[in-house]
Structure formats: C-alpha cells, structure tokens
Image (tube, rainbow, N blue to C red; front, side):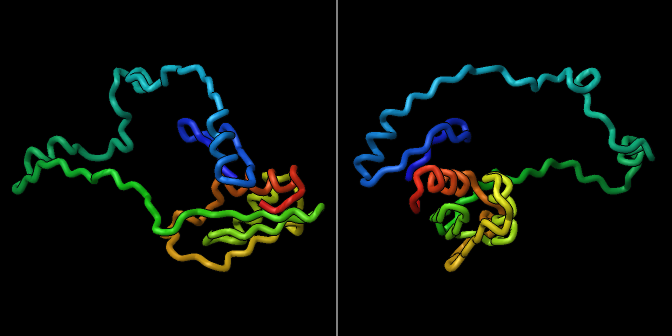
Length: 160
C-alpha cells in the first residue's frame, strides 16, 4: 500500500501486490489544485498591531526605570520531528470487525478515533501494538495512513 500527499493532504491510495505495481500506480497519479493566496494580512488586527493580552501595569515605564535592563531577543530553532521508527499500519477486516496492528502509543485513543472515522462501534475495532520502539510523542494520535489502510481493507475485503 502506498499513499500520496500534496501539501500534507492525502489525495490517492494505491494497493499493489508488488513494488513495481505500486510505482506504476504512483506514476499514474495526476493531481490538480487551485492555488489561493492565504488571508494572513495585517488587517486582521486593528492598525496591524497585536491586541494586548492585559492592560494591567505600565511595562514601558517599568522597563525605562528598571535598575538593570536586559534587552535581547531569544529564538528557538525549528525542530522537525524525525522518529527513529517509522509509522506502520496493518488492517484486517473480517466482514464486521477491524483488527489493526499499529505502532501507536495510545491504543485506546486510536481505537476511538478509528471507530468514529470508519463509522463502526468501538467494539468492532481492536488495536494491537506489539512493538513500539521510539514514538517520542509522535505516535500518540492516529495518522491518516491508519484510516486509509482500514478503509481499503474493508473495501477490498483483505488484509493490508
């Protein structure tokens, strides 16, 4: 199974018997979309200024009269989540129930979310997480590939 994304949105799913078939399916995917300019203008706040969270005190005067002043800007670099262990899903549909083998840190949450997404009672979803090496919080919530694998296994009536 291969899924394809554009700007973070899943647009296609290919189920294939061989890697070559999956590559051919990927090559056949054509995606078209309309680019729109996002509404991120300064006019979202009055006169382009941030709204004050509080009006208590006079920070400008307090800073001007402070005996010690530190006027610096500190930034935190962008951190990209790169887990050591890849996300993986195996879904088995038996005609009424799903069994999902997942690398998840939250089997109960995963079960509840997948039941809702798939439109079945929670009792019809079993999530099994046998091996989890390094989630570091990146596997607390279900990712779209899990629902895609389950939906495809139901549609094709076979494990994926």
